Amino acid sequence: MTSMFQRAKEASRTLMLLTDEQRSNVLLRLADRAESETAKLLAANAVDLQKLTPSDPLYDRLLLTPERIRGIAADLRNVAKLPSPLGIISKERTLPNGLYLRRISVPFGVIGVIFEARPNVCFDVFALCFKSGNVCLLKGSHSADESNRAIVALIHEVLQDSGICMDALTLLPPTHEATAELLGAVGYVDLCIPRGGRKLIDFVRDNARVPVIETGAGVVHAYFDKDGDLEKGRRIIANAKMRRVSVCNALDCLLVHRDREADIPALLAPMEGRVEIVTDVAAMGTEWMDYKLSLKVVDSLDEALAHIARYGSGHSECIITENEATAARFQQLVDAACVYVNAPTSFTDGAQFGLGAEIGISTQKLGPRGPMALEEMTTYKWLVNGSGQVRE
Image (cartoon, one colour):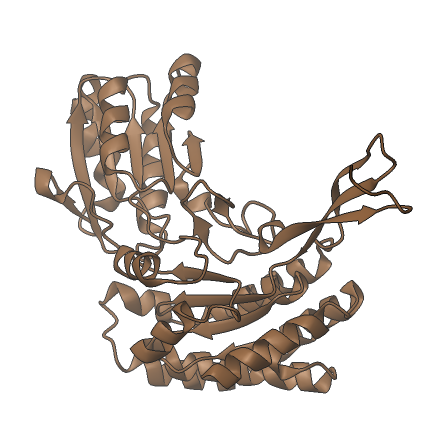
């Protein structure tokens, strides 16, 4: 696979020569092709879906539908219309010795993304990487291999028709060996991003020799405060849990203030018969990705904060309260990428944040945090112009 990595590195140098208009036009063409080739994409996806039963929560993550493909196309068009993240000067100064300094945004170069199930990731990752001038290496799972290959073939066709090197995107084999080689591709891969469950993320972090940004795993809480509005709580909790149970921003644990314990049946009513409520202490800290929800009654805001600090993953947390001081304290003290007041964690999404799309939700503090979109796909370099100065 070294030859794949070498070609990707070479392609990363040529992408810098493209204009933003050229990059955007490719994404617009891809959006049109995705919609016109919907039947072909769905046929490939159907082969993958045969490996699962519809009752499996992963089935929803893997599923492509005409509506979802239209949504993918809309995201591609949104990314195409966004301003380029490249060439932005974030710092500029002239030193006393006359040296002129600029800090300017540039691509990382080659970005490897390891992901599970969700074939839409192929479109999202390519769009964000290509628009930001990065080459991407995709390593998907066996469960979505037919879908991934169909999507990448479509992208390659658009690149070829646009006169652009197809090595701008490479789909690696869906094997453990490919993962190991990607994680060890020092000198070729500038950044690796795992997008999946905790097991995948831990493996990548523990075994990578290339830089890694952690994304994806979410143990998500909602705290219904003593001053929470019951009707708001019902809607927010149901949406956070049931909108899509298999995604990383789905609700995993509901904390309820003891003064509102009597309201628990009403809060859970919209989920009755669909979601299993788990009160076992041993289940706390579980990312369910299923129709299950942990429930705990707490005596105070401080107890809720302590629980989240112990079991949360730094992804998304929310509070439902009409008390502004309580809300402010919650947002100040909760250590997570996204902290909500009176809104569901289902909004943690690059497109929902107005960022066009996302490559994942970063849960770490060094580097990007939260939805990783165009701006987060860049690093920077210093440009230094002189007129013959030498250092004493």
